Image (cartoon, rainbow, N blue to C red; front, side):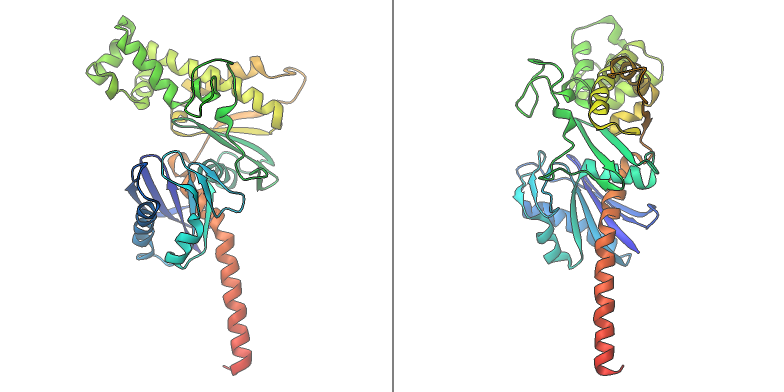
Length: 336
């Protein structure tokens, strides 16, 4: 039974057909419409991507992974930072046009579910997932259930305050965790180094032609992997803050495993090595309590697509059972 997962990010909408074992058998993508674009235009873009896949495959349900607040009923996007969705009834709007079961899920929840079902969190009864992208998202899976919270908006780990009065965050507060451990931070600090004219930024200057606006996180990661000490130090600083925040989360949730995903996790041990050291130094009760393993996510950029598709699968099964019951009833009535 094939289902489609659609992962809506700030720059791209990725969609894929996914099998029951988590394999993506077909893919497509579209550019994400601008923040001021009307909701109907975003729906058209999603439908265009889904339509391309349904033209090639028999599909039974669609899962949407959306960056933002998704209500507990998984029908409504309460707020999306990259789009004009405000209390947007996305599930019903898409169902009316697709005529397929649709489920809407927060993107970090979808990615965490994929890691628990098919990736680095597989088999763990108490899983904590932290996603490092431009900001920080996350989720908790306990005994096979996503912990969405009373109103559906749990897992906004990036907005824990770690430095009172610290850097201003886009959310309006100061000192949020994602202002010290995220892709945005990595770029911010690398640009500061580049614009200062520091001699240690030579590799960054060569990679970007001296243009700070051309600098991206992958630039820093590639240069660190190639041995540039300044870029390795930048990643280590992000990793240290990552470890401090994870120690706080572990104190609260007591997971058996912590999985770190998102684009910044592509740095691997350049990030996770310092994170493990800071985690071990910071965890409350260290030395007297079991400590969870801290692992890199296994599914990479496809986690959102795979997780959304898998979360839609039970709705496809329910529809199939309902159709089967209707067919039995029809056969009993007509005798054929």
